Image 1 (cartoon, rainbow, N blue to C red):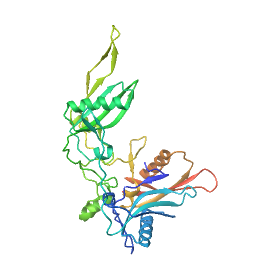
Image 2 (cartoon, rainbow, N blue to C red):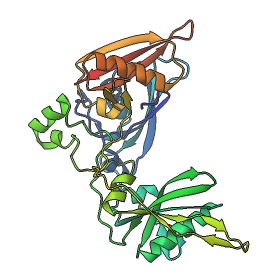
Image 3 (spheres, rainbow, N blue to C red):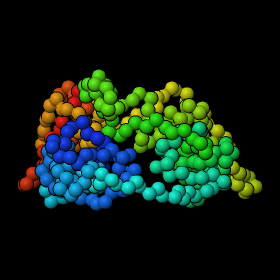
Image 4 (cartoon, rainbow, N blue to C red):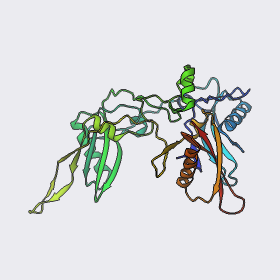
Length: 346
């Protein structure tokens, strides 16, 4: 779901031209490979994503930049019709980014990976344990012990859920030479959309902006997919008290279901109606690459982002859309009502 207060954009090169302005928008990968020399902010009544992209390109030109990377867009707290856009600027001869020396913690001889590293690598196994772990150190030790026994070089703890007084932990294991995962960009155009089909037909760089079947989400692992892939079981390490008063540890395993699942694709907020119909919400960066076939607006009093997204999705479905994007939310000058502007996509 799109946050209405703060939207982080994994910006890529938009398919919308920046008019006559020379400063070009960078992808996240390009921006991370170079050193920025300055950060700037622009404010304005930007009603579409292309509006603020062109405005930022002009502002970057005025600062003598060859390129820019939009990091964040906010809705102004003092005026809900205004957006505040933040970007980093780069010279044409920008020096390469300085690689930071990696400092990783080690447990039981196995390295603990941060998510930023783990998400880019293909795990060779998954470990799921259940038990009482009073501290994070205990969790790391228990996972690392299992990882070491399986010959892992690194591990990443992806999830933890409470089951009574116990925790169930899921962690992914990696070899030292783990292959790169085939990641889907967060702002990929849905391949089953009109824009996706047009981009595929066009080919070249345009086609590279479209979702690719079989590629993974860049923001999350799919636990069920990997559990089924590795025929994984939950290792039960819950403790019980014997008749002698001693604590015994159970090592029972629990078999998972073997229903086939697909690798996780880009995660989008989905609105589901009571009759089962569904529609997905596009983020700002994806919507900027697509052309809406229609726009609708509605007005009312809504307390949460979920309420707004549900109402937007419901109306989008009724209008025959496959996807929708909340372009703008404007508060009434008097009273608590808001007006929501929604772009519709097939």
